[in-house]
Image (cartoon, rainbow over the protein chains, first blue to last red):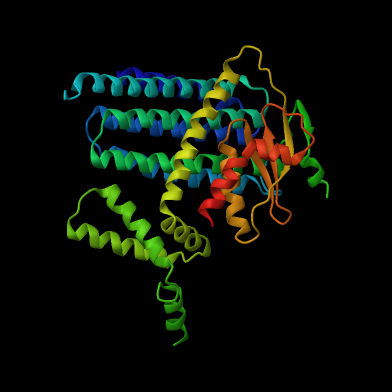
Length: 87
Length: 119
Length: 181
């Protein structure tokens, strides 16, 4: 049961990776990387349920906080008018 | 007075838990599908962010129904609250910055934000 | 002497509302670590005090005071948000799977009438809530004139802006006003 869920989420990650490679602007890649990060967080919670070690849920919480801060910092960096924007 | 049998109530909770988990994984698959199917940047951001948030909290609620112990439920509730609050913040931040740097929406009916940009 | 006075000003001695933030952080520590031994409790108290002392910010002071005083209203707001997120994901999923993609998107400008005090905080919270309702995403805010620029997935043709505001986010405004009363 849990194995089939993990397989479905890994298929979703592979489909989103196509958009990371292809996307015409840099913001497409940021959004796709954020989606891959959240799906990875789901895999961490499911694995903690599968191996019966509930400390992985704390790891998922810290990973979520880091993902949030990373996307905000990337948005602020790539959003300045001068500098390396938009390729 | 007859007490409730444990079997029927447990079956009901199991069916609700399975519904949330299966719906959640289908929503995650639809979010990945939306990333390759939509023609425009803003619609891709919009659709994938919304379906991914809904799918994640659906799977987490399903797990919470299956494993009802004290500290696991509290930690999962903390994770759910954190994800509900921060996913819209990242989507809005990316949309605002992308508009400020000049990514234009195609196929649009009416665009009122461009009137503000010209001032 | 002046440095000691600055240090004392930054700590919770100068601002007693910091105790709410320390309480919320300490509750998060207890939930996340899960054991009630005295060494863990003392360490959690010390770390939350240190976090509040390093970043003394006006925003978290106001927000944590409002959250702890109206705790039940905040919990009800979270439940409303979860329900809205689920319903929104079902509607957008139906639009995605449809083989013909039957929508035309647009960016509209909608006014709001929140109160004038705490304008920045309530408008930010309302912008995040609008991003979670089905079909809308906030692109830009105008804080002085109180406008939102909203990107809609399926265009609604309505020239009366107040009717549009009521249809899109009427009861959310009322829920937020009840939290921030």
